[in-house]
Image (tube, rainbow, N blue to C red; front, side, top):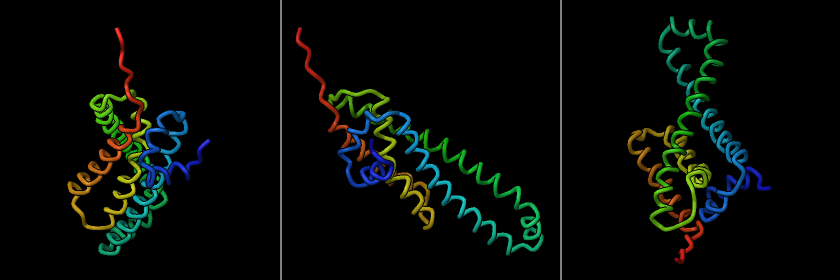
Length: 171
């Protein structure tokens, strides 16, 4: 069985293997997706904590209020960040998988939506890591989304070429 670290490294540096991972069990793929979600949530939470601290320092009343409710604020924020990251990543994977399914049909390859969904779960690694990196810079969200979409679609095209070809039927 393939380890999560090997899956991560292959997602980053072996785009041809993305197509091979379409036959992994859905449980292993979901575990990998939740690892990505945890990474995104962790960095988002750090940004949230530093953002609240900077804002609290600027306003005297807010500083005391945040100090009083931080036992409630931080766990709720962590839960909310994890929930929204989960929903957003699963929606992104599903949309890109639908686009990837179109590529499979265009390139006359054998595969289904569920196969492409699994491939997309690994192809989205670069864009997920870049979105974390872009959040530290003042890059517009439209430009960041465009760059991430281009990278993910490019990886899906590469993976689509590695799906098996359709067999020609004889009548």
